[in-house]
Amino acid sequence: MEKDFTPDILISIHEASQMLGVSEVALRQWTDEGKVKAFITPGGHRRYSRAELKKLVSTHSKALGIKDLVLKLEDSFEEHREISREAVEHNLQTKNISGESHEHLAQQGRRLLNLIIKYITEPSRRNETIEEVRAVGREHGVMLADLGLPLSHSVEAFLVHRDPIISAATQIIKKKEGFTGRVVEAIPLCTHVMDEALVSLVAAHQQHYKKFTKKLGGGL
Picture 1: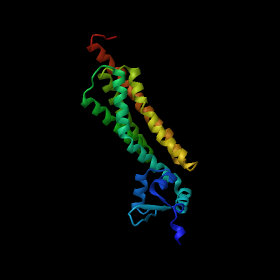
Picture 2: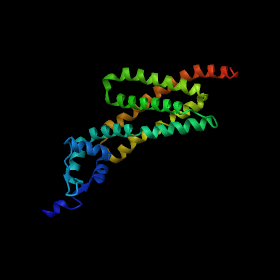
Picture 3: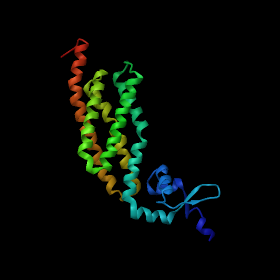
Picture 4: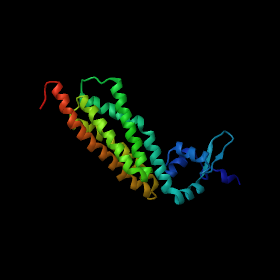
C-alpha cells in the first residue's frame, strides 16, 4: 500500500499541470470544481495520480486544450500592455505620451483580447463579435494617428501583439502532443480577428492622420 504514495505515482500540482499542458491556476480550478481528483497531504499540498491524469488526457484533451488557451489569453493582458507601451514609445522616439493615452491604448488592447476569446468560445455570435472587433480597430487607428504615429509604425505597433497570441496556442499544441484539435482550429480564428482589426485600424488611421499633419502645417 505504501508504494501507492511514492513520487512516481502521486505527483505535485506543478508536474500534473505540465503533464496536462495547462496552467496551475486552471488545474486548481478544475480540482475545486471536482473535475480532477486530488489527494491532500498532511501539509495541505495537492497530489495527483499519474495514472488518472493519463486517462484524463486521453478522454478530455481537446476540451482541456481550448480552456487552457482561453486562460493563457486572459493571463496575457499585462504582457500586451507592456508590448504596446514599448512599441509606441519606440516609434515615437522622443515624444512623450501621457499616462492617460497609455491607459487608453491598454484598454483597447484588453477589449480586443476579450473579443478574441469571445470569437473562439461563442461561435453563434461571431458576426456580432467581428463588428465589435472592427470598432476597436477603428478606435485604435484614430488614437495612433492623433498621437502622430505614421501608418507603417502604427501597423508595426499593432502586429507585435500577434506573436504572443499565436505563441500561446502553439505552446499548448507542443505540450499536448496531437490531442489539440480545437486548439489548432483556434489559431486561424485568432489571426482572423487580428486581421479584421488591422484592416479597420489602417482605414481609420489613413483618414485621421491627414487631419493630424494638416494641423501641424504639413498636410499632403
